Structures are given as structure tokens and as C-alpha cells.
Length: 338
Ligand code: MG
Image (cartoon, rainbow, N blue to C red; front, side, top):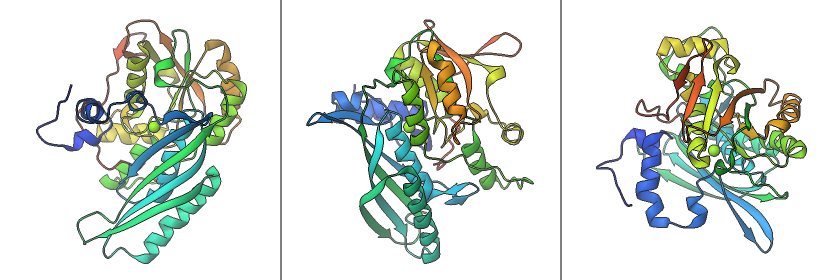
């Protein structure tokens, strides 16, 4: 059913409930087709017997350079990761730049150098692009769009719809690092050791996982909206419940400290180098071992389990043994986090 909001607010871009309502109420009805309706990190389709994945994302992060990365490498990693989440080997990227008049050449050079390095590490080529320049003040320094194509070479069926009761939920390391890094920069927290973004290409890690477990059920990178929102999406798409184990959730002490200071739940903070992997229980040990052996998975842990009921819900089993419902991100928009 077509349903447009009266006006667009920041929350529509937060990746939480409002974003989902905009997509379902305004975008899906206009462009409706089975591939779009699938609502996964990238669209998967076949051309001439070859299975391909296709994805796009725009990057508006503020500040454009931050500890651990910048808007350039973030734009490469984000699209590479969305392709990898379907089991695709990322191949080709497009890069669209929107630049603000007056931007310094050396800043642009820094960002492009970072994109070049990120593309090399991920093994992707930028094969087409576009540049627009707008008058001063009509964009903030630089916005980047990247789209990407990857090839799926195995018989994988990885999707938000495929989590099954009994599966275990794994993550490759600490939660909330990117979001808290950006927030602490903006809030000028002036921490002794600045928090670093976790931005990273995950295709190598995913390849290693698929080698030992081709029947991964679901993979998704918990970017905007964080682990809490992403698991809610999966619980709804798969019509399962997801239980998180509080005592297993990995956080950096520094992230927890800053989150407390700002009154923010780090489960809702964006990650840019993390993947939630949902696999059959009997495969979890092997998957965990290959994750921990990979540079981007050293701190991998099992954080929860998929349950048959209540469908579409995520909850936390707390250290005290009680249960707390974990909803999708609502309100409290954190604009321009990625
Ligand atoms: Mg994604």
C-alpha cells in the first residue's frame, strides 16, 4: 500500500523503523518486483547461467576523515560488504562523487588514495564513475555513491529469510565501534585514546567462512541501526525469534564508557567491519574457528540462538537471567553516521 510521510525527517535515513516504513510505503509500491521485494544487502539474479549480486549505497559521513578511516574507504568497504553478504565475490564498482565547490584538492587526494587502497585490498576494480560539483553550501564537502557487482560461484542460499530455529548467531568482533567513533568525534569527547572505526572489507572473511560452511543461512552487516535493528530485520524476514546472550556480547571498554556518557545503547550503533553470521548449530564451531583465524575475525564469538517463537522478535537473556525485548531503532536519529 502506498503511504508517504507528510515530510521527510532525518529519522527516515537512520536505517531503523522509519527508514523501513519509507521503503515499504513509498519505494516498494513504485518499483515493485520480486528482486527488490527480497530486501537483502544486495539483489541476486542470474544472467546467462551466471549468478550475480548487485548493490548500491551512498556515503555522507560527517566528519569525512575519522580515526580508523574516512569517507573514501568506507564507500568501498560498504558496497564490497553488501555484495559479500550474499556469498558473492565482489568484482566491479562504480563511484559517483558529489563535491562542494571550494573543497581542497589535497583532501580529495587523501580520500581517493584511501579508496584506491581499499579497492586493492578487497580485490575490486572501479570501472565507471561520475563527478558533480555543486555551489558552496549545497553539499557538505563530499558525498559518495558506490554501486557494485559480484559473482556467486557456489550453491549458496544466504538471505535474511533463511534463519532457522536452532541456528546459532555469530559476530566477528566488538560491537558499535564505528558509530561511537563518529559520535565521539562530533561530540568532541576528547578521549585519551580516540575510538577507532572498525571499517573493513569483509569479503576475505566471508570466503573463508563459506569454505567450511557453504550452507550459511543468513549473513548481514549490522551497519545503520546496529546489531539490534539488523537482528530484528532478520527475525521478521525469517519469522523466527532471536535470543541474544548478554554475557557473550563483545564490546570495547572504551565504547561502553562513551555510550554510558552519551546515554546511548551501543547495540544500536553502526558497525562497518562486522558481520552477523547465522549457521546451523553443528557448523558453528568450525565457522567460529575460521573466523578467529582471520585478521578481521580474531574476536569472533557466538552471541545468541535462533528460536521458533516468538516470531519476529529479538530479546536479550541478561546476565541476571531475565529477558529484555530488543526493538528496532526508533527515533533518536544519528544522521550522517556512514
Ligand atoms: Mg548491509
